[in-house]
Each structure stands twice: as C-alpha cells, then as structure tokens.
Amino acid sequence: MSDTDFEPKIVAFLCNWCTYTGADLAGTSRIQYPPNVRIIRLMCSGSVDPTYVLKALLDGADGVLIGGCHPGDCHYQSGNYKARRRVIALKEILKQAGMEEDRVWLRWISASEGQRFAETVAKMTEFLKEKGPSPMRQKWAV
Amino acid sequence: MIRRGIMQAQIPVEDGNAVAALRGFLKGLLETGVVEAVVVPMETPAGAVTPALVADPALLDAADPLAPVMGLNMARVVGPVTIREPRGKVAAVLRPCEYRALIELVKLQQASLDDLVTVVVDCLGTYTVPDYEAMRAKGGVSRGGLFAAARTGELAPQEGYTFRDACQMCERPHAERGDVQVWLFGADLSAGVPISLPDDLGERLGLSPVEADGRRAEVIEKIVAARIKVRDEWFAEIRGRLQEEGVEGVFAACIRCHNCMTNCPICYCKTCLFKSPIFEHEPIQYMNWVRRKGAYRLPADTMLFHLTRLNHMVLSCVGCGVCTDACPADLPVGRVFRAVGQEVQAVFEYVPGRDVEEPLPLVTFREDEWSEVGEEE
Image 1 (cartoon, rainbow over the protein chains, first blue to last red):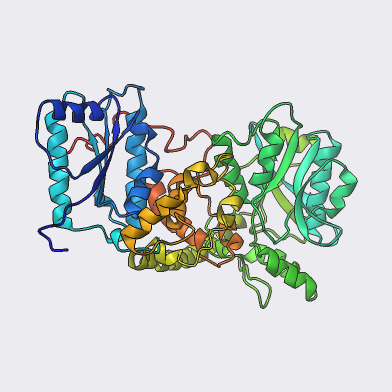
Image 2: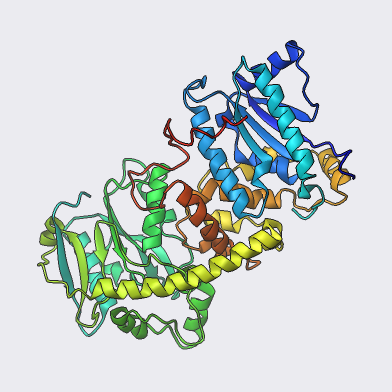
C-alpha cells in the first residue's frame, strides 16, 4: 500500500451525552469530516473497558478515539474523571508493552462542539496517515 | 486490630527449634481465646504443605508457619474465611507478599481485616511446589541453613535448587505491617524468635518486652540491595524483550490455560470477562478476521487476554509470582507484571498493599489532576 492511498481506520467510543451528540451536531450542521471514523456509542466514557480499545488495536484498527464530556460535565458526575485515569493507565501499559500509545486519543467534546468533533477526526486522520498503517494489521500471531 | 502501644518481645526457643516456638505462639493465641482458629501452612499426613484453618491447638503440631514453599498466595484462602459476617475471630500467618495481596483484596471487597489478627513473618525465601516435593523425595528439606542465614542476611537456597523466581527479585521480604510481626531478619533464632505486637496482646499471651539488638535493619538493607540488583537486571531484560518482540513475542508460547489468572490472588472476578459469552464468537466472525489478516491465532484473543489482565491487575500486582509458577509454558508472567507494574504504579504513586486506606487508583480521582488530558486540539 502506498502512502498516498492509505486510509486509516479509526474506531471511536463516544459517550451518549456529549461527544456522540457533538458528532450528531456535526452531521446535522453539514460539517464535512473524513469518513475514516467508525463510531460506537456508549453511555459514558467511564464505561470504556480497556479491553474494547485493545481488541480494536490488536485486530488492526489504526487508531482509537475515546470521546467524553468535559471535566465537570459528566451526566453521571464522575465517569469521565475515571475514564481519564483508565486511559492514562492504558497508554502507559501500551508503551511498556511495546505498542504505539499515540494511536489512542482521549478528547473531551461537548454536545455543542460539532466543529471540534469534525476537527478532531480530521486531525487524527491526518496524524495516522502520516504515521502509517498499524503494524497489527500484519500480525496474525496476536 | 488497632495497634496502640507496640511491644517488642521474644518467643523463647527450646532445642534450637524456631518452628516449634512459633507453633507455641499460635497455640497461645487459641488457648487464651484471642482467636478461635488460625490460618496457617500445615504439613499434611502425606508430607506436603497446604494452608489450613486450625481450631484444635493439638493439631498445630503439624503447623509449619515458616514452610519454605509457596504454591498459592494465602490471601486467596483468607478472603473466603473473612469476607462477611457472621464469621469467626481468626489469625492468619502470612508472608509479606501475602499480606500485601490481602490488603488489595480488602480494597476490592473480597476480604476483611475485621475480626482478623494478621501474623506477618519475615520471608527467608520459598521454593516452588515441584522443587519442594523433589527435595522431600530426595532426602529432605534442609531448614537449618536458612534459619542460620536469617541472622546474617546471606540467604541461599538448598544446593541444587533455586528460590522461586519472584523471591529472587523480592525487595520486600520483611514484615513491614501487620498486627503481629515475626522478625526473623537479624535474629539468632536458636535463642529466640523476636516479634512485634500490640502490648495488650503481648500481656495477654504472657510476653514481656525485650530490647531489640538493632541488627534487623542492617540485615534487611543487605538483602534488599542484593534483590534489587537481580530485579533491575531482570526488569531490563524483560523490558528490552517487550520493546523488541512485543507481548506477542514474550507470550508467544501461551497455551491459554488461564492458570496465571486462576492463581493470581488479586484476579478475583466471579464473572470474568474472558469466561463470558463476549468471547464466544460466532463462527462466521472467525472468517471475517482470517480474511483480513490471512491467518488468525487460535484460541482467539490470546494477547488480548494478557493485555487486559495487565490493565485490570497490574496496579494491584504485589509481585508474589504465583502466576509464573502456575504457567505450564514457563512464561515469565510475573516478571512482565512486575516490570510493567513498576512504571504504571509510579504514574499513580501507588504501592499495592501499602495502606488499606489508600484507594485503588482506578476507583478514585481528583478533579484537578491531568487537566491537560483530553483538552488537546
């Protein structure tokens, strides 16, 4: 695959109340963003078990985006604060395990930030295009 | 048990038999009614060592509180005995790594310190079950050398054997916490076994305070320095392998038996994700995966299993190493967990088993921490 026609696949875990609604707003506002993202809606960023992220990475996703409410705005009070610690732990473990932790992004995007959602996806797509395909795409022995 | 005043005392040793002296101490706990039963390693009539709950003082003649063998982490068996009321008042003899695991289990609500007297013993090093059984079959386990070495800190395994992998790199073999602490390091065990305990308990057991000779700290320092040297070499080696080969290299020979998970004292979930229907994939799903990569390792999700266990467990890993011993493929599970754990625990400034009041890093948070995370453009 040449650099030019590589289209990264991003799996996004978005919280129902903020980031998913933000993504919806991007759509209804007709804001253009790259079609590289596959969105999975969860009730809260705090319910993203690291296993989901790892499963996506090991099966060859080029990036994983976790989206939640800004600190202080969680519909369940503290889910995003817990998600923050969990993602920090996950990224440190990925680093220690010899995996590329920069393929995992955590972003707070509110229901009114359709523009920020579109920009985040565009930026992540661009970043992953430059970085190249995930090495896991080729590894069957995981 | 709350430690108000602490007493340093000495359990008298007769005929140079420190194990018998400790048995006597445990019998005292039962006979004075401090506890109704004791969880302690026992030598079975067949000669193997297993933990048991003992209520009859006479049966404590078979107790071996310093047995140099570790097949399972005692915290796993103390949990069910203490977890909820109604329960008995119990004492548990624990190595430092077992005490630390117990503290983590208490935080995970899988054990309780209420109605429990912890008796934490300095650990002179342990053998695997197969090694211990081989020693028994070939002329016996020599204990005298280890007891003598407690005085100097020059702990060495029996000739022809090694200590368990985890013990060789254990930098916390000394009783630091616990209601009763048995201080073997620096002690002349032919004369007496030094213990540290609450003074009301000491008085109840008829013990009187003695001056410590101050050798303990020095001996611990010596042992810890030697262990850290081994630990850091092994950490460097395993970290290098993880960076070069990845988990799929280090765990390549995994047969996915789940022994590491089953034997981990902390990995307690009754409804483990990996035994749930989530991982009962549809047959056609395998075809989707194999079309994508050309080949697909079976059983599926083997590296996902190890990486998930790292995510779920590594912050609480106390380094007991029973995972390594349980692995039929001889994988360095415990070394990976300890090496990765050191880094991840440092991020949260968390030391597993240090303090029961210290919350688990992933169930707590502060609003004002890592405030830059998630706000990037």
